[in-house]
Length: 334
Ligand SMILES: CC(C)(COP(=O)(O)OP(=O)(O)OC[C@H]1O[C@@H](n2cnc3c(N)ncnc32)[C@H](O)[C@@H]1OP(=O)(O)O)[C@@H](O)C(=O)NCCC(=O)NCCS
Image 1 (cartoon, rainbow, N blue to C red):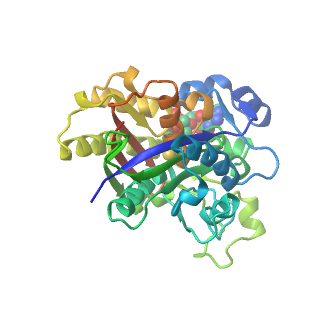
Image 2: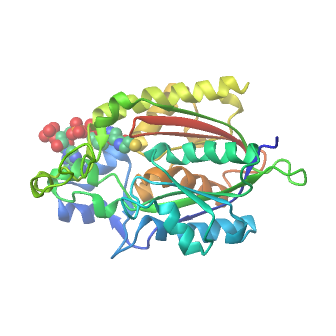
Image 3: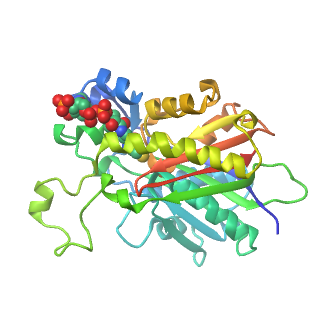
C-alpha cells in the first residue's frame, strides 16, 4: 500500500484588491483597528458574478501544469468550500464541467477552515487504498458577496477574502520517493460549538427556510462570537500539533516550517508562543489575503514553496481550525 504525495499546487486570487481604508468607506472601522486586532491590511474580492468554482479553475490549471498532468488524468475531485457556487449541486461538479472531464467522481467537503485538511486525509485514504490515482484537492471561497459590509457586520466583514488553492495528490512512486510525501493527518470536530460561527439561514431546520424578516435581521450573514472562536483556536491548535508530532515520533524541533490556517495573525502568534516555536518558521500571508477559509492553507503552502521557504526534504506541518468546530493537522515531508 503506497502513500500519497503532493504532485503539484496552484493558487489564485481575483485581481481586485480591497484595502482596510476601502472598507472604512463602507462601515465604521479603521485601518488601525483591523491591523491591530487581525494583522490584515488588504484582501482580494471578486467583481461581478464569479463563483468558487471559477476561482478554483484558475488555481487548478496552475496545479495541473506544476504536476505535469492533464484534466483527464484526474479521477476524483474533492472541493472544500463553505461558499459553494450554489446550495446544490456542489462546486466539485461545477468544476468538473469546467475542466471538461464528465464522469469523474466529484464531491464537496463542508469543513470550513479545516476543509483542506479533511480533504487531504480523504485524498490520502483513497490513494493508499488504491481507489483513486490522482485526486484534485481544492479549497476555494467567494466570501465577499456573502458579507454584511455595513457597520452591523464589521466584526466579520473585515476578516474574509476570496481565493483558491489547489493540490494534485497522487501515489508515491519509486522513481520519486521523497516528493512531498503525506505522512499523516489528524482530524477533530466538536459540534457542541456549531453556533459560535455560522450562517444560520436559509436552513432546512427552519420552516420556512428564509423570510424577508430573517433577511432584514441579517440572519443570512455569517455570525461569530469572535472571542470564543479565538479562545478555542489557541487551545485546540497547540493540542493537535503536539498530538500529531507525538504519534509520528517527531518533536517540534524536527519541524522546518509551520503553515497554519490564516484566520488572525494574533491567533498564529499566540499559538507560536504557546508552542515555543520560532516565528520565522511560520508562514503567514493573511496581511495580503485576509481569511480565505478552505483556501488559506493551500494558498500559504504554495506561496512558501514558490518563494523557496519550503525546500525539498523539509518537514512541513499544516494546522487548521474553524467553524464546526473543526480542527486538524497534517505532516508532509517535502
Ligand atoms: C474578531 C476579532 C478580531 C475581534 O476582536 P476583539 O478584541 O474580540 O473585539 P470585540 O469583538 O471584543 O470588539 C471590541 C470592540 O470593537 C468593535 N468592533 C468590532 N469590529 C470592528 C471593526 N471592524 N472596526 C472597528 N471596531 C470594531 C466592537 O463593536 C467592540 O466595540 P465595543 O467595545 O464598543 O462594544 C477577534 O475576536 C478574533 O479575531 N476572533 C477570532 C475570529 C476568527 O478567527 N474567525 C475565523 C475562525 S476560522
